[in-house]
Image (cartoon, rainbow, N blue to C red):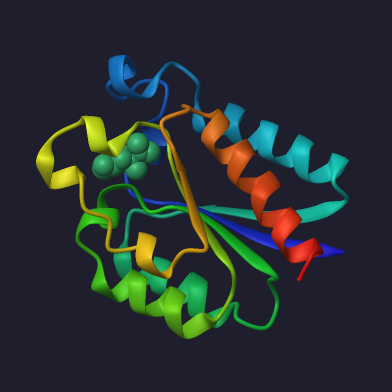
Length: 146
Ligand code: DQA
């Protein structure tokens, strides 16, 4: 059975309440339910974590190296700043898909650059909560066809 680690970065625990004009009204719990449902239909297992701490995210990626076939990550604000998370993904060798709810390229210029994209197999952004589901599907497909 394919095992996927899903990581939600900082402030995503506030989804639904946080800047709903940008991120919508769907809560993280609702997104996680949809992720679980899709994973089940694809006969994959997901472990879902949210962290506001850069080092904790590094630990999640590197300490789980043996257990997971793929990583689905929304690095949130760390997308634009974290060499540490980028290096952890690169070092893990685990196929990783980066997702964002919003289209970071249509927002402030400081969000246009992702330090994570060059080490991700692919990126899906701008589709709200559906970005996670599209990303999960793409990740499972790519692991299946490896
Ligand atoms: C985000 C975009 C980031 O720029 C922002 O810091 C977030 C969420 C998104 O999903 O659209 O926290 O990753």
